Image (cartoon, rainbow, N blue to C red; front, side, top):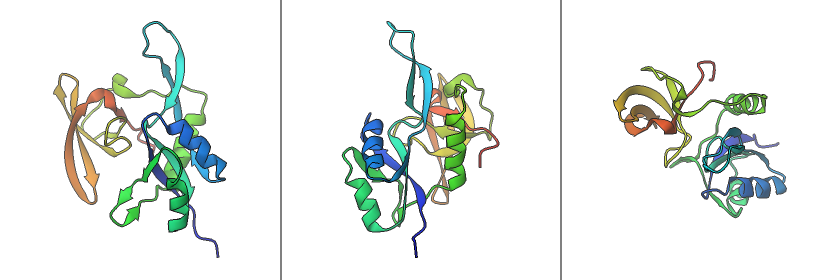
Length: 174
């Protein structure tokens, strides 16, 4: 009997997303690196470049078997599978499918503070140690700072961060 395959978030070394993606794909493991196009930050260029939607993360599809996880973690640049003290936490297929649809559409993704946030809006943290976490927008604090409520293992924590590191999630996402 085949073990069920689940999607997991894989933390990578900084700027190693593509290297890890290529290596994991070479091991015949399903891997997904969502990308978006954005304007280069270099002042001497006016280019649109592709960057990871979640810097430092990609998604792998594997079983919960220790041997499968070890095979992934032995990849150069892979750091750890995201989870809790019971082990890696699977990501629902529907969320990965939504991400794949968004990134495969021939449209530019809008991220960052170009969208007005209102109390209760679902948001995702884009950069920093909590990159990839979803939460709820609470309020603007001023000077580009916002307060986000994050559900961590059944308890809520408030986090203050730069509004440029937060993206509003569409209401239709699960």
